[in-house]
Structure formats: C-alpha cells, structure tokens
Image: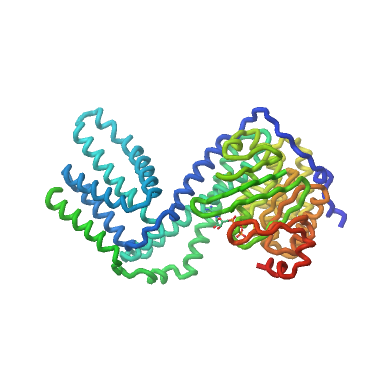
Length: 269
Length: 240
Ligand SMILES: Nc1ncnc2c1ncn2[C@@H]1O[C@H](COP(=O)(O)OP(=O)(O)OP(=O)(O)O)[C@@H](O)[C@H]1O
Ligand SMILES: [Mg+2]
C-alpha cells in the first residue's frame, strides 16, 4: 500500500538542544502532581506495618474504648495516665514506625489546633488548654492506631465485628476506588506534562480537561470495581477470617484496655 | 544518549529497579523483556523523568537528570520534547475531548502552525489506519483503539526518541502488524526506539539489542537478536 510509508515530516529526526532560556513552566500541573503523589504514598503505608499479631477487631475496639473514655473524662490525671499507656505501647514499634507516627501526629495536631487557638484569645485559657491536651491524646491514639493498621486490616476488623456487609462493601470499594482513581489521575497528569512542551497554553483549560476526564472515567471505574468485587463473591468472602478468635498477643491488649477502664472509673469521671 | 549508572529505585519499601547500569546510544533500537513486575515500566518512567532515583546517576545527553534538575523548566522541556512515551495503560494517557484534539495537542503546545498540525494529524490517522476514529471521544474507545490513538498522539510530535510500553497489548493481529511495520520504518528513519513486549517475535525484527530483566528487578542479559536466535534455551525462556 502506498500510504504505508512514513510521511516526510516524520522521517526527519531532529535532535534538540538543551536551551537554557528561562521557560515558564506549567506550575499548576506540577502542584497537582505533587499533591497526588503525596496522597498515593499515604494510601500505600502498609509495607511498614508488621503488627499482625493482634486481632484486627480487638485493635479497633481498643482504639474506640480509649477514644470514648478520653472524650468523656474531665480529669487531668486520667488523661495523663492514658498518655503514658499509649507511650508504652508506642515503645513496641520500630524506630522507623515511631518516626512516622511522630510525623503524622504533628501534622494532624497542627491542623486541628489551628481551629482551637482563637478560643484562647476569646478567654477561658485553662479550659482551652485542657481541651487541646485532650485533643492531642485523641489524635495520638488515632495516629497510633493508623500506624499499626493498614486499611485492609481495618476492613477485616469491621468484618469480624459483624458490621453490616453493605457498610463494609461501600467502605472497601471507596478505599480501593480512591486509590485506583488517584493513580489514574497521576498518570493522566503525567501524560499532560509530557506533552506540555514549548510554551504552555491556557492551563485552566487543560486542568478542566483532566478533571472532566477523571469524572468520566470515575464512573466507569466504580462500576468496574463494583462488578469485579461482586463477581469474585465479595459477600461470601466475609466468612473468610471472620471468626473472632483471640490470639496470644491479644491478652496484653485486653489487659491494657481493662487498666484504662479501671482508671476511668476510679479517677477519670 | 541515555546513561544510567548504579540506579536503584524503591517504591516505599518495595524494590522497583535494582542496581541498574545501562547505556543506550543515539539511533539504537532496544527491546525490553522480563516477567511481570520486573521493572520495565519503572525504567520507562525513570527515563522520561516522571520519577527520579534516590541512588545512582542518570544522564541524558550528558545532562544529569535527578529530582533537582528536573524541576528546571528548561531541562524538563528538553527531556519531554526529546522523548515520546506511550504508556502501558493508554486510557490514562488520553485527556482530550476528541481523537483529533488528542493528536493535535502536542504539536499545538510545540507552537507549530495550524496547517502543519492538520497535516500531521491526517498523516498519523492514516498511518495507523484509524481515520474512522477521528471524531470519536477517546474515553469511549476500546482498549486497543485507545492504544492506537496514544501511539498516534505521540507520533504527531515527531520526537527523536520513542518509548513504547507494550504497544502490542490488546491489538488484533491486523493492527499488530501495522504497528510492527511502523516501528521498522521509524528505525529506518533513524529514531531511537525503546520498546517492551512479552512476545519476542513482535519485536525481533526491529531491535538491535534486547535487555532482559529477571524477577529480582535486575538487568540480567543484554543480547543481540542473532545471539538470542542461536540460544535455544534462552529463546524458550523468553516465552513467559
Ligand atoms: N505505584 C507503585 N507503588 C508500589 N509499587 C509499585 C508501583 N508501581 C510498581 N510497583 C512495583 O514495582 C515493581 C516493578 O513494577 P513495573 O510496573 O515496573 O513492572 P513491569 O516490568 O512493567 O511489569 P508488567 O510486565 O506487568 O508491566 C513491581 O514489583 C510492582 O509491584
Ligand atoms: Mg509494565
């Protein structure tokens, strides 16, 4: 076929020179890319987690117990004791995990404290300080929980606690789906960036295109993930691993919880 | 052209590429093979500067590419304009509202004039035998059609280096042959090609060298097709 030959312009191979002129780059794409890759990293935090010794459901309950008791308590002494207990638990983590825990804690804490700070100015300093302290403990507790649990384990924990299947299904799909979508968005932005050479033209329109694309594809993805999960018998699979057996390591966690409860009854109220 | 020394890439704690040393010259055509998850796509993302290695040195035409230099718009533009990259997953590569807009996006950014752009778009649609898709919406296309559009959208920019991650995936035999022929012609036009494939016989006529990775994310072999043809054990081991 005559038209199978390469067109003439494509036969020319031009090597470019690195041109050190200052070119205005598309900042928006880069900023979005940074946000997305940060997000993806956060969702993939499972490799650091080696704490599978304790049952997922028990860890979940234990976190909730501490959370509720701390929020219900008005006693400084009780909250201090809980703080020490969490610190003791933290000591069992590896150095790297502790590093990340500290990192996450500081980030979450600063974000939430910003909303509380105005209270100090308005008045009632001591109450606000107590509130901030309590907040710190709650966040530390949650950060610790997230450090020893992957999303997968949280889902397993919910299953073991016999949460309604529908809730679990929705949660599980959302998590898987957000991750897939984030990866899709990252690749999409990469594609834009690779072809944004020379002088970038109207950024806003391109961002509009990318998000329009994301919306269209998200519809496709949700139904695909949903169908795939149903086809593989998602509902039936909740039988798997759903027994609430106690493992050896669980007893220490139960003991910790009992201590916290007793402390709450004696000094916490 | 490409020079990698002691490159090490980690995804969080998982290895992507392990101590890679590699040199690719101008005008060479390279095949990349290896089992699933051995790091082929990771290598491509590294070469195009989408990800950067913590350890090791990557030089593109003597320009060091790392997390710092790639932030410079001049370096990024130079790299991106020199290399055309067809993703393994084409659906995430397409973001325009029509196939024609998709193909003209790159040349438009490069600042070519409208006549030239239209010429390039028609030529590429014809070249890949996808004229019938011109007015379609990319996200509604089938997987194979999306792959063809992605290839065309890279060709319209006419980069001197073209990287294709499994371009034959999901194509019918008719289109496989079309893409194979195009690759051979691009090679004749003196383009640098880097193509991954799970089937050696899709690329054997195109490539000068075949890089074979193993499960440990390590570059194990760097062979010419003549050597591979002679080595029956190797040839069977290439059938993953
Ligand atoms: N975003 C990511 N996060 C974490 N690990 C990843 C990511 N992408 C790839 N990997 C891991 O890195 C390794 C190399 O992946 P890569 O995609 O480069 O493989 P590949 O050789 O292209 O495989 P295939 O033939 O299936 O396309 C794999 O073990 C994979 O699990
Ligand atoms: Mg791949």
